[in-house]
Image (cartoon, rainbow, N blue to C red; front, side):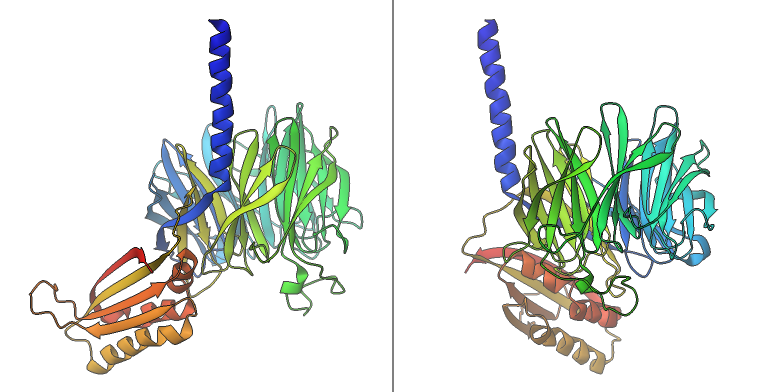
Length: 507
C-alpha cells in the first residue's frame, strides 16, 4: 500500500510540474479594468493586502491614489493623499507590516524626503513621519526603497539619483519613523550611482542586498547585518560583448531549487538624449537584454545567462521586472518596457535560463509603474504610465492564452450627444472620431453611420462607430493612443450616453 501511495504521490507531483510548465509557456495578459487617477501621471505602483482586502497604491506627481482591487481585477477608487510639498513623483513605494502596524513608505523624488504613511483599516493613508535629505544620507532624488526584516528589527534601504549618490539604511521604528543607521557613498568600485532597482536574498541565515547603478552601469552585492549595517561583497560592470548593464534599471530575483538568481534589466542610455543627464555619454550600444546572475554561497554575483531582445520579444527600455509566480521549479516574470510600450512575460527555469513566453503591447510606455499581485490562485499585474495625458492605472490578469487564430476583433461604440450640445461641437466630435483611422495605425478597418432604425429600441443613441482590430495588441494601442485620449478629453462633456461592446468574429 505504501508503494502504491508513493507512486500516486509521485505521479501527482510530476503532473503538477508538467501542468505548470505547459501553463507557463502559454501565459498571456488580459486587461481587466482601468481607472482614472487624480494626479498628473502614474509613475509607480505598489499593492498590499490588509484584513483580507487587496489595495493598490498609484503614485505620481503630487499625490498617491488608493484603490481596492477585487478577485476579478476590478479597481475601485478609495482616496487620494497629497505628498510633501505637493512634490514627487512618488517614485519608490513599498508597503509592509512593522511589528503589527501596516505602513506605506514613499520615496518623494523631488521633495527630497522619505515619507511614512500608516495604512488605515479601509486602505487609505495617514502620514505619520518623514525624513529629509542631508549631506550624509543620499535621499535627494530618492527612487528606490527596500524593506529588510532582520531578527529583531526592520530596516529601510534607500537609493536614488542625487549628485552625491550612495546607499543608505534606516531603522524602522514601531511608529513608522526612520532612524539613520549607515550610509555608503558611491565610489569607483561599487555601483550605487542611480539605484533604481534593489532585491534581497536570504541564504542560509544570511541576508544579501543587490543594487543596480543606472549611471555607473553595473550591479553590486552587499551583506546586511542584524543591526542594519552593510558591507560590499562584489561588483560587476557593463561591457560591450556579453553584459547588458548600461543604464541598469530593474533588479529582482528568485530562488529555484537550491539556486539563487538575480535578474537585471536596463534602459540603455541610448534611449536618453545626451544633454547632461547621462554622466558617461561615451557608451557603446550593442543591443538590449535581460541578464541573469547566479549567487554563490558567499552572496556574490556570478555571470550566468542572458535573454537577448529580438524581433519576437519586447525588451527595449526595461523599467520594471516583477515576479508573477514561483513554484520552486520555475518562475514567471513580467518585464515592463518604456520604449517598446509593452509587458513581456518570461520564464526562468531551475538552471537559470530565461526564455520569453508572450507579450502584450499595452499602448502606453511603462516608466516604473508595474506591480504583480496575487489574489487567491489568480495572478494580476497593475500598471501605469508617466504620460500626463493618460492619467490611468490599469489591471491585467495573467492567464492561459486564448487561441484567436483566424479571428478579428470588432469594437462598437454607440453614442448619444446632449440635447444642448452645439451642432458644431457634435460635428467636430464626429469628425475627430472619423480621423482616428488616419492617426492610429492599429485600426485595421473603420466605419460609422447615423442611426436609421425605426424599431424604437435605440435608447436615444444616434451615432455608431465600428472599428476592426487584428489582435489584442491593436485594441490596447487604440484605447490608450494619444489621439483617442484627446478625443475623450475634448468631447466627453458633450456626450449624453454611450454603449461600448467588443466581440471576436471570424475574418
